[in-house]
Length: 138
Image (cartoon, rainbow, N blue to C red):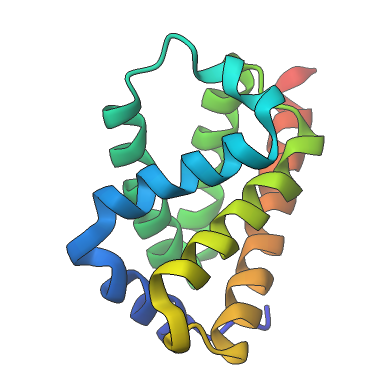
């Protein structure tokens, strides 16, 4: 794993005061770039979904250095996302929307090192999620 946990934590700390706005912007970015994903959220309470996004980001970052906790967290998320109809090919779209939203909110604080840390962490998370989706789909 080539991410720097302090940078991930720092970025979450920096958006904390605006986390609702951050989550809303994440979904706006995702839907603008990939409108085909929006129907998955047609019957979803978006305010609740936005809270769940922030909670998931915090939980995942806290779990990254605890492999057993991370595995359990990812398994639970994968099972939930499978029920929602998530598809493995959507993960790059989600990552790009996440990185774009961080860049917008952090401005000059979105350093190359922070971006690389998030990309590395997201690679780990998405690989585990994809594996989890494939396992629970069997």
